[in-house]
Length: 385
Image (tube, rainbow, N blue to C red):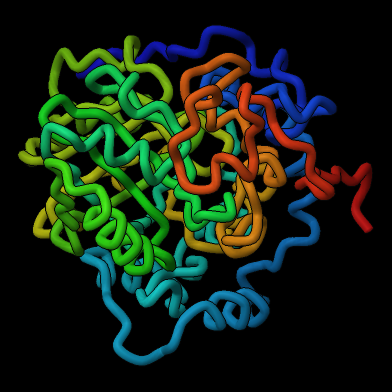
């Protein structure tokens, strides 16, 4: 099987709390960098989980969760992912979310319910499996694709080596955040994942920007033909290794890197080391026709537990990760969101050159952050209310 050794360079407990939250006392210091995030401070998060879990709804009291997530989408014409039947067989409580029918929690398993699903993902040697197939997956083609992407997002796309990726922000002319996105370079194309609730608006925006750009670039929306699974938790590497080809080197796979591969013998898959929980983990892109069989294979492993939207939200909140439409929106600039690090450090090319929409609203002519009157902060409670 694949090598299992974790690539984390430092003990998790050495990562300062404010680094994980993406916050700092100096608005010009990028604390929440991919390098920091690769050493997820589970010690901090598990302490928080032990108290935070007491306020989470249990599996027997899920009406609040249902109302919260149902409000995010109309119940009409919902798209069902390839895992819909599997979710239902596990007792998934299905709710509308971003135009899809997805499980908010599971009632048919021993470790089901938001609290248990949350804590399983934090537990040593365990991993959680999330269906995130509602996310928008886009392939960018053409010799000018990096130049185009730098005209719509704040990150250094041209500087990505094959297999490497980054978190970036799509901005408007006022410097507000249209969406956050993970972008990975794959040599002959660039792979982008955007939020499910905003993906159609994003693509309309990209189409408008492409008309203005006029260079050699093509956008390929993968639709629902490719499904996306997230395997997250301290045991994610162990679980992933069991479906990867023999000899696949997980040891050398750093955070925010990805590659094309087979998964459980399935051709046409991708694996990216990233996630949305504050733990080590992977996003697995798989053809829709094989997604259910891959998920079932992963769930055969006793260290893997399914997890729904409720736990996904509580995990990302505990880790200080932004939810678009809640913590950030089109009126929030990168610096107000404490995401200035996505533009690079002091003196970096994107900071000094700008070139993305609204750059002049958030950066001075020499690449410094303009002062703002508000900023996202994290508040950590000392005890349960």
